[in-house]
Length: 414
Image 1 (tube, one colour):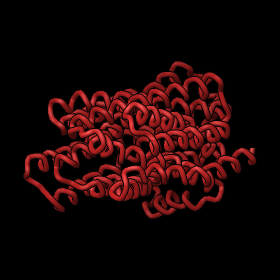
Image 2 (cartoon, rainbow, N blue to C red):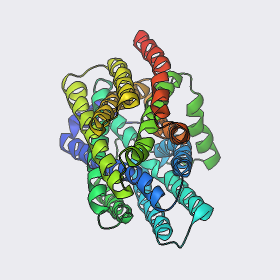
Image 3 (tube, rainbow, N blue to C red):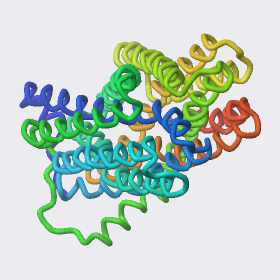
Image 4 (tube, rainbow, N blue to C red):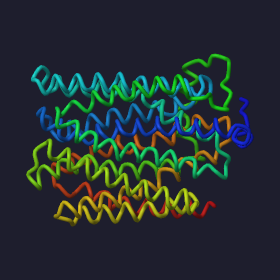
């Protein structure tokens, strides 16, 4: 499979490269905005429609499983269909999926759909959405690998992470503001925004320097090749680190909204605003860490992983012990800083371990790490929360040992 040299492409068309990266980063930011907004609203929407904590966790876990399975498959498809086309498919599916998710929740809030029927409809709509939206992060990461040299790879993936954090900052704020109109109203806004982004990418994103294959690849072959990435021994340690980092984040994010409601007697709308503000501050911390340490100081990827583990661990310890809302918010900021270091490092290391013809598949695998963490995290976290409100954070603390060992082994490989 042929591919242009990223360095020659960048040298030859600097303006086109800058515009391409801007469009890519905007698409990533819009996707992150929608995801964070949904995660922020779910605890409040769940309580408002009479769902239990475990049922809310089930929605996230089921959709995360589908996302994780679909992500490397879409990354593999981007080798034959092209990065741009796959991104348009992902954004379009995200828009339609969010619209259906919003309609189902609207029915639940109005009493038209209740109980198990409501939960089943939400799980199904979110799973269908995840199956298609997984295309966008995988294609965006592969496109970034196409237009960066190996020396630029960590910074390039860091910009993807920074864009993700910009969306994470804007998402909770916009969600909190729009939720004052109606609790489900922000979901309709996300559907409209991602539809506009899909149109923008289709019209204005230049093609990637990667040259897609012209032959039609059988679906069975794409599925087999894409899913085989999970068994690749070259990537196993990176996959484990990424999954544990995001599982830790999921344990915290999906229980904090309930904790705010229960410990501080907040209403669902108040808890949505408080959690949104907390996640916004965490995203700002993550963004600052990426800009200073990744982009400015150009820290190596293995050092970034080593910094991520203690940062997340310190946040979990504070959450386990703290009683004040301000301390809890500060703890989540530390967790956000850890993710800001860890995410671009995992994506960069994975990209550098494979040749150019495997960039799509590996970009999909790296993009699946958040979803893999969210398969187990929400269900386990909400389950532990029903037993004791602080047990989810104790579990994050216990994950520090295996994460530290893996981070040390990554550093030894360099």
